Length: 305
Length: 232
View 1 (cartoon, rainbow over the protein chains, first blue to last red):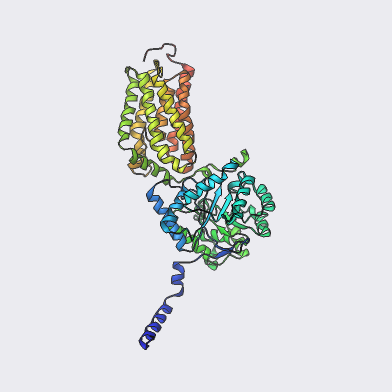
View 2 (view 1 turned 135 degrees about the vertical axis):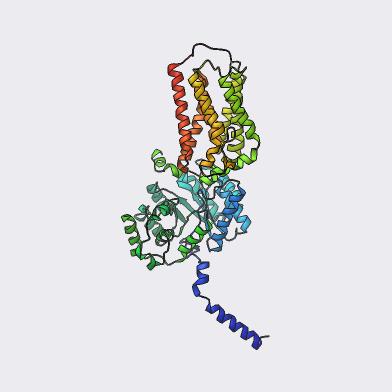
């Protein structure tokens, strides 16, 4: 029964809640913006989590728990897509440990790869990857660095047809094999393509990113910080004077926003071992995209350094 | 194919962070303790065998080295390193094959067939092996790490390979120099890893490899006392 006292307390609570500065909670847990995956219309947060090197910690319980803490911060901050590969040592098993500890198998957008020259070995490798992740199926499987891509794509498309896989993609990195990647993008009905893109590695802007838009493919940008080298190099310099105009208070934020502001990019996948870094990355994804002229100003500024 | 690999920098091929690498050494030390005491004692036996006409030294030296390679292969490479490097299982095989080759040498009647060597060579090998046994573990402190991640002969791969290559190149001749191939392969691999990690230990590994090459060149070119064989 609603009494006068109930109404009074409810009103007081509302007034108190309203008096809390609006961005206090917003800053504590910013959610990254979402991007649409063209082939299905599904939304995915524009900041993901890579696992190259950072999650390759072997069977070390202390480091496994630290990685799980990073994953917890990632999920708590609204992240979903985690990317790994059988090439990344124990990273898959680390992710599997974290997912089990955090009970987040239902939340994760599980992106992995198939990476074997043995065309017939793809199925076994995928099964082993699934055991490492402790998940029966993946959301996205990609042919890693185009290795034996014809045979592996055939397998991945068959898994998709059976309903055991939602998305199919291919990856490249370090700016290599772009011509071959372009041919595959033209000839194959891919859902995703993964490539290296950051403020210094921008060759993909010429052909591959426009092609991805034209073909309706989602794009995952790897090496957003060039394995941290880019951030370390930039931190020796002050932020551009106009950083405040776009609400950027760190180089990492600015560099990440440069990537996810490209209209063809669906998601960037920075890797980290630190909870504060994962939060900062997610915060960067929660801010408005940089306008094209701001992106160009950033490129121009970095070229002067 | 080649241009594809050339597009990578050495650091791009590094699969783990320095923190994780040295943590594996720390965990391996915990796993096998107190095996380190036995392997270092074995190392001191090596020095005695190099310096004095210890009976059966031609067989003792390869036997001790075989034990060290087996322990390092099992205690570090197989148990820890293979978890973080996809080439780990292949490196594990390399370590076991080297252990087997050394063990086979130990059961041969003439073993390593160490002939008379110049005093300079014996002293050089002795000092360097002693440094690797006693001082090398403490460079963990110089690198800002705890002694729990000390690299000890017979457990960690680098000092095991360095001690082996110095003894083989300094004391052996002929086909037995082939026993330096596996240590050399590991040291090249390790040097690339340490370089990528920005670790100062790379200079120790490179210096040890160069000194070993100089020992081999000295033995092959000058061949002091090569013709006069002496029972071990």
